[in-house]
Amino acid sequence: MPIFYFRNDDVNVLDEELINVTRRCTDEGVPITHTVEPANVTDECIDWLIAEKSKNPRLVELMQHGYDHVERDVGEFGGNRSYEDQFADLSTGKRILQEKLGDAYLPCLNFPFGPYNKNSMRAADDLGFRIICSHYNHRLSRRIMYAVGHALNLGQILDKHVSYHLGTYPRTGMYCIDMAVSFIDKYIGEHGSNTCEFHSAEKMAENITPFLNFTPVIGVLLHHRFHHTEESLDLITKTIRHIKTIPGAEFLNIEEIYNRTCPDPGKGFRE
Image (cartoon, rainbow, N blue to C red; front, side, top):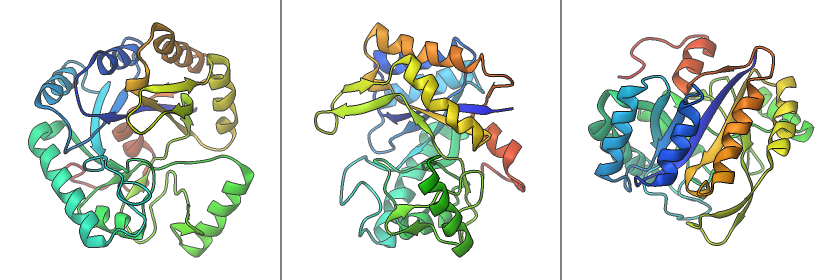
């Protein structure tokens, strides 16, 4: 039975795109996990997120997206950034979101732009994050690299990330629930742009199919600011309805996936 989850990145201000993308998921009974930028999120956005979470406790989930979404090297994290620098940013971000979101805060982290290094993971682990979201690729070359990395207990090989999807990241206590499929085919413009080329609904279905052979949990990635036309919003609905035709398909949020698939989820998950 394949499990699907939807994650929406770069949540900071309350706008029509955030509201509309959330509604396209919740109206279909599909959970959406919003990744919130601690340094940039407005009080208005926080109030709306908490209200939505209160109305739809399992359909709206709130986790941490780095700290301030500023590129410092190859991304916000990773590159040559030290443990101390990354610990400081992640610690400040976690404190901000815990204070603003309270019990709605999920101790789950993903890194803006994608990059991270061993210092990023060590800092996240030391700060008590229980779940890390990165990226899983089904291509044979990547699966071979993942197998080598797992055998050697490595998090990276030649600067490429080794996915530990549905497993524990090496030398940490953090469980990995990685992303698989994006709605966006190509980004257009500088960082912060809201212009892109989307995959078609048919291409999304085509992209999803191979993952069914390699993983029981498939993440679908959203960036709400790009979904500012009716056509782009319809793409979300069409993809959800396609997934519903897959035999046994189920939609869960990240915490539910953790509790169902982690061999030892332990106690005090939200402490």
